[in-house]
Length: 289
Image (cartoon, rainbow, N blue to C red; front, side, top):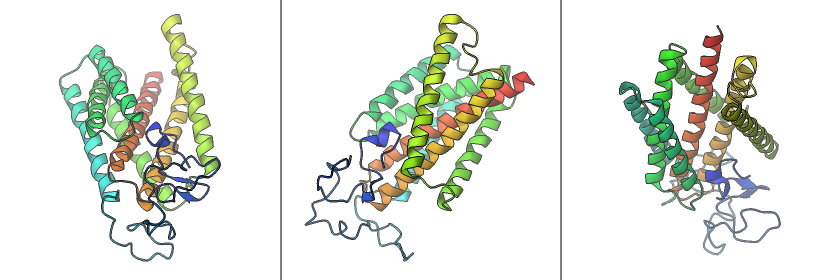
C-alpha cells in the first residue's frame, strides 16, 4: 500500500497486494508500484526474499526478533530522528514565543518551511538538513501564532492544543498497536479522498476570504469552523495511523536506515497538522463562548 504522505509515496515502504515493499525480488508485476523497487535485492543474494521477513521484525509466531540487519532502519532510529525533528520544532517555537516574534515574520517562516518541506518531499533520498530546517522554521511559525492566539484570542489555547495533540498521538498509537485501527487499502483510500476534499474546501474558503474579505465561506468560523476543526483533527489521527503503518512496514521489510529521517519527517508533518487544528478549534470555541 502506498502512503498518502508525499514523503513515502515514491518509495517502497508498505505492502502492495501482500508483497513486501522493500525485500521482494524485482519481478515485474502488473499494477505493482514497487516492481522497480530501488531497495530490493537480487533474489539470488537476498536471504529474506523467500522468508518474507527481515531480522528485527517480530515473527508470526511471536518468537524474539533476530538481531537487526546492518544498515537497516530500526525503531530506535525512527524514535531518535523524530525526537530531533520534534525537539527542533519545540525549541524554535519557544524562541519565537519568548521573543514575541511578529506575525509578519511568522508568515515568512511558514513559507520557508513550506518550500523546504516540498523540496524534501520530491527528493529521492532524505536530506537531514532540509528536514531539520523545515522543523526550525515551522517551529518559529507555530511559536508566533500560538503566542498571538494565547494572548489575544484564547488564553491557555497553546497548552490545551499541546495536550490535545499528545492525547491524539497516544490514543492512535494504542489503538494501532492493539489492532483496533487496521490500515487497509479501503482505509487508505477513504483517508486520501477525505483529505483531498478537506484541503480543496479550505483552499476555496481561503480564496474567498482573501478576495472577498471576512471569513470567506465560513468554514473556519462559527459552527462550521467547529465542525471542520473536528474533521481536521480526525483526519490528522488517520494520517498518524498511516504513518505508523509506514514505519512498521519499513522496519519489517528492511528499509535503509536513512529512511528513518523520512519517517520522522512524516510524523512531524502530521503532528503539526493536528496541533494547528486543535489551536484553531480552541480559539473558535473560546471566542464564541
